[in-house]
Image (tube, rainbow, N blue to C red; front, side, top):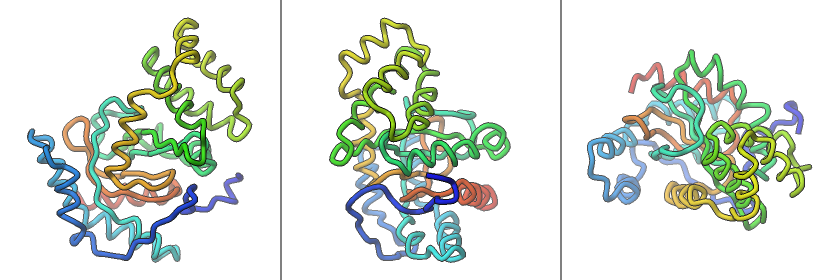
Length: 267
């Protein structure tokens, strides 16, 4: 898919659930309480408070949607969300004030477009200037991508052997796109920089990695329904983020505007 063919908000999934607009301040205290029930330490309580303080960002999402003729989509996207990012694939300053979490499926073509064409605009110098850390979590949709769980688990297995291999495989798998077959997958794992012995173990035995399973559970708790999906918000403590859940492939320019809105709001 060429950048000129970019469809900003189309979601790669065969079932879509419609949402009726509700102002952010009225979004379920009940839902948040259920999602964060059992949280007892100070960081958890702070995360819960921050999830409730997303009015300004929600308004920014709505405004951007209306300005671009995407009001219905923007309204559907306004959902408070908070999550932990411990152990996830991360790039950027781990102390930066803002965090963007992507839920991805390595066989999703819209995720590939995002990874190849959009993500580079949000990392590197921009991330340093804006104070943004980018985090990747897994949401393989096995119902339509039978090999997605396997590929996500290979990335996590490679990370266990060499942390830097995670981003290398993320970019390599998406750069290969729809031409990625089992032979190409194995080739990329062996070229990721991990020791040959570890590569052989990953390829021979890893079908489902525990981190992928944990990511799927968290995605279900958050209400993720397709890929890509994002949580954009403020860092809470060292390993949590509180903000809003954005359904669909948001272009980098819109993510930047939302980060600017967060910075201006000072919440």
